[in-house]
Length: 225
Image (cartoon, rainbow, N blue to C red):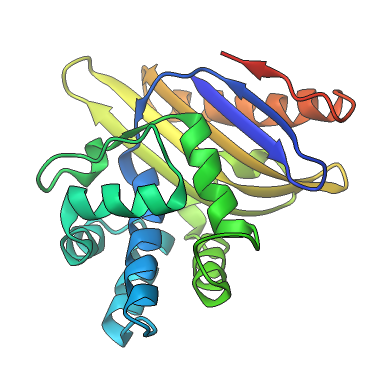
């Protein structure tokens, strides 16, 4: 398991684990960010089709929508190009059509959350507002993961059974409100015996990460590798 948490109001940050994990559907936020950067370069808003497809991809985690937008951004090369702009340095795009096999670190996904939620971002206000709105209206059956750490949230989850090991990759990331503050939170995991076991472990890690960071006085930033 890898964990990254940031309290943006004071810069307190903690990272545990530097290994790259399979992102599964977590990469759909990155795909949407790449699409929005492309539209910004072209000086246009998303088309009606792009916006509705993005909504299905994020809110319902629809894979067919992700396939379509993966093609729209230029596949793995398009994602790699966008990630240079987004300052993600340890993310390797999945090959061919396999966007779900993109690999990334918790620190990189924390950088992506900062691009989604911070004012100083390559994504303009309209682009950030769209991603934030979609992440705040996830389908009810996908309200798990980092949401366990707070009462208000915007999130995206990813899950994937690994046929080589018969184990699960379970991931969650987002912004949560807890203990009177706001936190960006990423949990990446692999090796769970079932999806439910993985979700439980991710939720416990999310709660622990926020609790530990809250007990660390600023400006100390524990970086654990």
